[in-house]
Image (cartoon, rainbow, N blue to C red; front, side, top):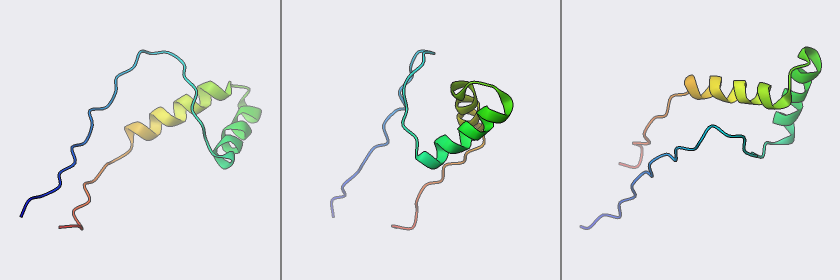
Length: 66
C-alpha cells in the first residue's frame, strides 16, 4: 500500500533583527508584571524567556499513529 509522507521543513534561519510576534493576553500580562518589577524592557524579558524555553525544550516524535 502506498503511503502519504510529510517531510518536516528545515527551520528558517533569520538575521539577528527584531520582529513582531503575537502572544496571548495571559502571556503579555506575565511579561508585563515582570517589567513592572524589574524596569527591564518587555522586548528583553520576552526574548530571554523565549531563549530559555527554547534551550530547555525537548521535541518528541509522535509514534502513536503506528
